[in-house]
Length: 420
Image (cartoon, rainbow, N blue to C red; front, side):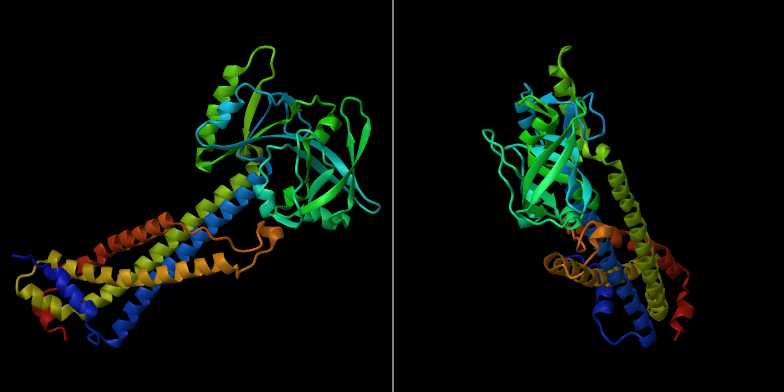
């Protein structure tokens, strides 16, 4: 013998039957459903845009310096670094370490670029044959990437679009740079050839970095052929940054000796704290937005439920007269509210996901790169975010509906039957 959920059956009949509600109550309930749909739509957009913005900006900052840099312990925060040997015993162990994606050598040298009309300060970043070009290939707007060989040296360099516009330079033009040697105080000049122009919209970085063969930086610093500024380590998951940093620190210290230079790992978050602290503040804004929207949507459903209860007062009286308990009747209206909430959530999901997919595909809404570091509104749509938003919406709104449903217990059957 099958058991029938009477409360669910009644709620479903009320929900499916058309034309049984008054126009006033129908408009109130429709407004509550619209509130749920619009609220979920805004929440999906808020989470997708904010997480997308954080991801894009974070990836661009990481593109200039990887997740972790291993530098000489005596190096300060400037771009004039104390050299270390690129031949390290622990190098292969870091490459094989769980969570590590890539490790590459680098060297930096601050200097200036001079033309007939302009002068501009830069940092010449030397890269080797092990450099991962994927980030700069994605942001290349003109020209091509140069190749680095361990046997030869190339004079090609990669500059940013911002530097190119400032100095009125283009691909193929010569780039005259000047550097000062800290030890000898002698000025050195190097002539490069611009082979490519990149643009990341990160003004702070674009106006600074010029990429060149690492051999030039060694020559400018009077370093030995095996000396570099340090190593850049890219990891697979940003959430593992602290743990991998600790593992690398323990590994490098275990190999260090009294007469050797000690290397220290520097995370990208500690190197640029102002950017990552600002990105972390966005999380608080999202939580505030989500909380306010859920509360507004919940109160809309509370008003809609009260209207439904008042409209069905006679039905409540009849059910009580035939022996139904208060909780049983409350369950009918909670089921009914659930159907209305699910209806609103369905349309909210459809609208939110559709908007995100369209924006991610076509980039309809543009941004000012100078203010937002991006040229289009970014989208990061994840199934986990959708599931959490939907689950949170239905749980919070249903909990809020438990209180107004208590009003049913105050309805007296004899008065309710004469309600109409």
